[in-house]
Image (cartoon, rainbow over all chains, first blue to last red; front, side):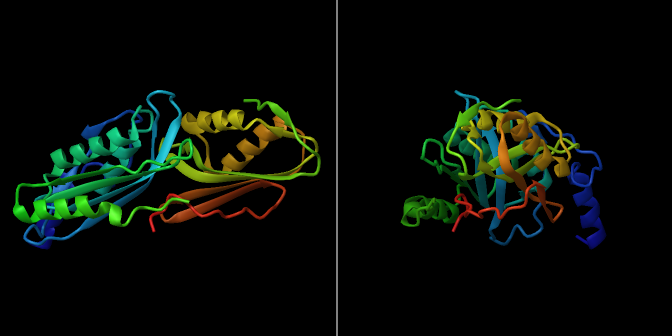
Length: 165
Length: 119
């Protein structure tokens, strides 16, 4: 694909980036997510997205919760467009979500969106009642190689626990 | 919003900090930041539960970034008597630019480590 064709194709795929006016949604809105095509699908490479401004509400008390989300994935054909991801993550602002649920929900939405080779979502939530919760979602497609990555990372996660404080 | 008064000893140097400040820019995009409050007690401070509720009430308020420190300062000043009240707000970067807003008496904000950062 020549450069011009690639640029034109990419511009059509993403509607929110550079749109001029951005509408922010404050209730869960997975329809905001957009993708663009991975031009190196033959390669295995990691993409890490850090979202330090994640916030939602406690579904029981309605009090705000905050956290950092770390999304690591190995793309296949589709990749998530980062502005659409930002808007999607902001859309949790007034949604009632338990930490463990929301990490799984985001992971599943991204798997549905991209069908990646491998994907994980780590939530590092701020402490509440002196306890911080760090759930991890992981997914691998059916290929043995990615299943092995998932298994290895799942089994070894607690060898390097996240330290808080 | 008015904060309830709690009585404390005079001449106590009090500094509060929260990483959980959130309000809306005029565009509707959420702003995140850290707020530092510093004053010398003349016998009063405010109820921290009220202050938490006040911070939460800002989540759906549209404010110019430059006004946020003044907004918090005035809420405190209307609620309690203090000496040398100052408010500093550090906002997360937008478009690669980080903002610090200060209102009231100057002070050194105690930079506590962000305990949520991955190491």
